[in-house]
Image 1: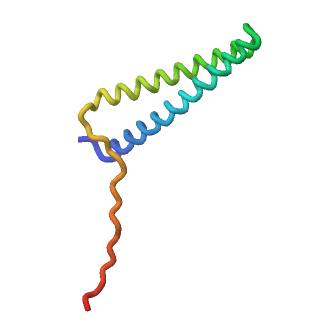
Image 2: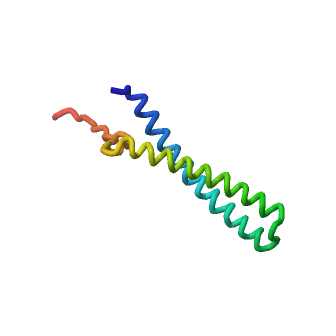
Image 3: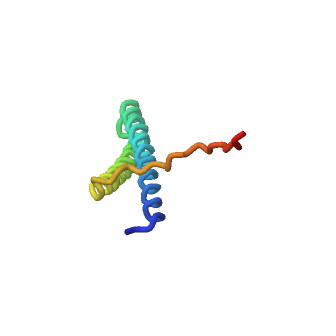
Length: 97
């Protein structure tokens, strides 16, 4: 059985991958809009080609991140999702009168 720190690190890594996937999806949307706008205004311009290159980079990053997350999910299909431990409220102890 793996130590607790390994599990905690893997949960943190998955959380970070999910955040990065969201960031890359935003980048894909931004650069797609930029490429469409530049292509509409000046087809074949340098700005359009740079936007298309960045669109390709962000699409590749999004694809790799999604693939890694999919593989992690497929590797552990039956595991329950672990969240932070529930917080228990501290009870004040009063002396009986």
